[in-house]
Structures are given as structure tokens and as C-alpha cells.
Length: 275
Image (tube, rainbow, N blue to C red):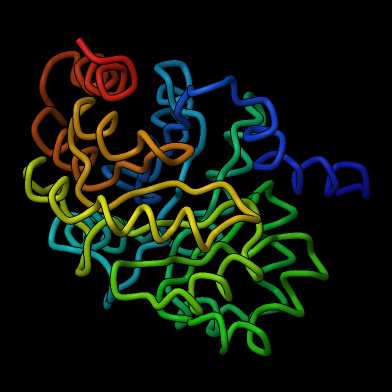
């Protein structure tokens, strides 16, 4: 990859937020690489973009995902059984890059990265066209020596999370060290679609603290969003929202049936636009 190409990939997330119009909300969709099948992930990502997705969070399947609830754990198990590896994941990104410049953030856990080799991982992820990395099991303090040197060398920014139990000081630390955006976890616990009222009641005061302490980066909020109404309510004071478990659940509901992808993309469109 040329230097200009690397620079282009670095700036996709920044470009997305810089071009965001007014109160428009960024929709970030999570899909596990290789689910429901490795041959279909790139096609799904391109379909998501056509139906309103602004950013993709591509999950790297792992056998012991600490932050993932049963739905995403299930999708990881399916992907691993179908032989998904790091090379598979990078191949999916390259395939998307043949047709799209949608920002792609890799989300996963440190064990497979260490097994692959930290330097090798950042080099190959950046070369494939990834734009950032989320690692929930590597706190910012450990990232400074474990991941940051390779992150900076290869231009693949680290995106950190804040949660309701994060102190003001920790939110500020995360903000200073994140690149692209800060991932705001709406509730304490693992991923999973929840009832809207459940998360609405817990998120108000937390968002006010986030707005006070996260001032250098855009904020996307996730964990528990399963409808357009959830997304509108929960993201009204931040830059956008993230949907993961509800997307996987929708695939499980329709996959294998006639015209299942069209029905799935209808759901994606409804998350963004309602109806």
C-alpha cells in the first residue's frame, strides 16, 4: 500500500464526522466477520452501506469474548466453526475496499492479536484497509505500551470505551488517547438488545457526564439499541449510535429463508430511518 493510500485509510473516520450534517446521526453497525458465512460478510457490509450504515464495526471472532453477550457469542462460534482466521478477516476488508470507502473498525480481543503478532496485525490490518481498532479487554493504561507503538506506526487508531461506572478522570483519559471516536457503553454489562425503557432510564445522567468529560472526540453510543426509536432517544445528545446484537438476531431470524437478505436490509433501513 502506498503512503497516500495509508493516509487515506487513516482519515476515513475523521472524514465521516467532519462531513456529518447538523443533527444527523452516524449509524455504526456491528457484524461478526464470517457470520453467517465467510463468503457473505463483505456482501452484507456493502448492503448495510446502501441502506444507511455510515460506519462498520467488524467483529473478530474469539472463543472467550469478555464484553459480548450470548447473541454475539453465538455468531463468533458459528464463524470459528467455519474456519475464520485473521487472514479471512483481512480478506473481507480487502473485498469491501474494492467497492467501498465506508470506514471499518475492527473489534476484538487481545489473545488472537498476540497470537498473530501485534506488529504483524497492525501492519496487515492497515494494509487491508481497516480504519481503527476496539479492544475491550485492553485498558488504556496497558494499550500505551502493548498496542500504541504499532498503532501509531501503521496509522490504525485505538478507540476506547467509557461506561456508566467510568470516573470523570477516566473519561478524560480515554478521550485524550482515543482516535476516531469514543465508544460510549450505555449500560454496565455485556452486549445485547434490551428493552428500550430499560436503557433510557439509565442513560440520561451518564450522557451528561460524557458530554462534560469527552470533548476531543465524537461520541457513539451502543449496547442495547434494537430499534429506530431506541436509536433516536439514546443518541439525541451524541454523534450517533451502534447496533450489534439486534442485527445478529435479525440475521438469525431470516437467514436461509427466501429473500432473507432483502428482509434483513429492510431492518437495517428501519434502524436508520424508521418506518
